[in-house]
Image 1 (cartoon, rainbow, N blue to C red):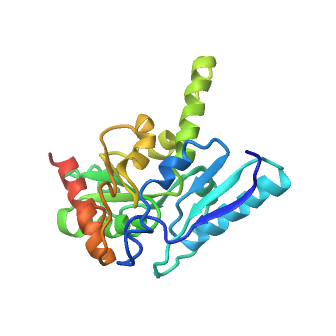
Image 2: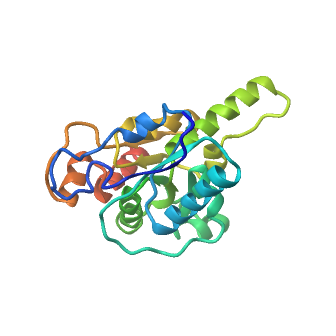
Amino acid sequence: SRSRGFLLGATAGRTTLAGEGLQHQDGTSHLIASTIENCVAYDPCFGYEVAVILQDGMRRMLDAQEDVFYYVTVMNENYAQPPLPAGAEEGIKRGMYRLRVSPLGGAAAKAGGAKKIPRVQLLGSGTILREALAAAGILGEEHGIAADVFSVTSFTELRRDGLDCERWNREHPDTPRKSWVEQCLAGAGGPIIAASDYVCAVADLIRAWVPGRYVALGTDGFGRSDTRAALRSYFGVDAQSIAQAAVRAVRP
């Protein structure tokens, strides 16, 4: 119970293996990790997120001497690695930060445009963050819906923060706090769609603190061997499926 170190979940998730077989497919490890009190679990997408997480983990375990260990899921998928966005470090460590602001609707809304553009918030975790980014493009180009994108590096850390805030508010009603999820989504507007490479229950970990309509997408069900694109389409976590869920949430 006092172990320290980094446990890397290589080729993690249920769709990243590209047909290498069912024996490695993982759709529940982050759900299990959420039940281990001294396990700090992250599902990063980009290299800069991994760097920030590992650096903070070494600080906590070696400098601050905290009795925690880190579970970090990584993938074997090749894709372009962008630079670290300015000011993203705190959000990466706390579990969530805004990566993309839609170019649609901003100027018109500020100027009091005649037609209000619908807006959604897309939350992506791990490799599925890239599908959320692609879905944001589809929504803007094909449906005229503004879509902001958040990278969720840890649903588990977000849940623990939310529970801590709830306890604090019960014990200190005169000085209430807001969870990190509530702070990130404050004033964002529109339905929130969350997608990961794990079962829907992982994204559901933060449902209690999400304002407004919340749709959780995941890889529930038995795994299969196929290409990444086919698997993500099958489970409903590819760009088209995320965009479709957003359109239905905006226009039920």
